[in-house]
Image (cartoon, rainbow, N blue to C red; front, side, top):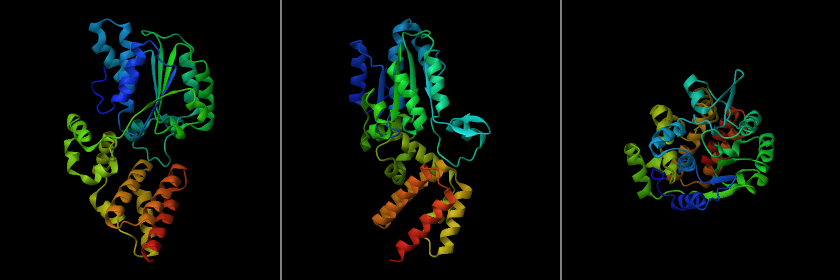
Amino acid sequence: MFSPLVGQQQAVELLTQSVKQNRVAPAYMFVGADGVGRSLAARCFIELLFSSSVAPDQIPLLQTRIRQRNHPALLWVEPTYQFQGQRLTPAEAAEKGVKRKAPPVIRLEQIREITQFLSRPPLAAERNIIVLEQAETMAESAANALLKTLEEPGKATLILIAPSPESVLPTLVSRCQKIPFYRLDIAVMSQVLTQTGNAEILQHPEVLNIAAGSPGNAILSYQQLQKIPSEFIAQVKKIPTSYRHALELAKKIDKELDTEAQLWLIDYLQQYYWQQIHEPKIIQQLEKTRKHLLCYAQPRLVWECTFLALFQISQI
């Protein structure tokens, strides 16, 4: 079941043994960088758990249902945007062309839906399974509501996917068995990108630098790079030469890029400036920019402060 997952032997061993020994935990936390296989591991683990309830010749159908997330015993929860009274996943927002000014979050009403889902017995499986992608995006009210669910999950297993234990409420972490995931070396990265039909990314060292051992991030970063015109990239990676220039760059970014693209641009600029200038103050300033954007500050104002600071640093 875990054959698609490359380079995460420890996680595979821990999860496989929990099933073999019939000691599946009520809650897991898959911790590690984005794009290193946490969601894929969750899917493989679910296939392994659910396969005991079907005949061998039904395994391919089971795998298809899990991949399409339409199995009656599976609930897959993602952070969402609020738009015109609707909750939209990042994929749905992109499909509708919605310009996103703030990162998506897991909302209290989504946790209530989990509680409702768990109130019924599992169908076509021995247990219900809930996966929470980007669990670190839970609002405090949502995290507290989930805590009550974790105290009495019933015939269910919850899988929280997060970058680190520190990014999630400590009382939630204490109720989960932690499964570590690690960044991949360049040889394994090359293997994964080639196997997934993304070998062209290997020709872009700046993308590999941004990805830092994460195949998923390499793919997403390359997709972002393809979306943004090269002329735009060339303009915004220049250190401003005046206050007016700084304000113009901020206006351009705010107008043309959504939040997801702006966060990617921070990664790109950090990588570029470090390679070209080796100035720690610039990297630190861009890290502040990321923090402010993630805290829902007004993007144009954030970028104005950023480029004004970069201009001042360049004058020292």
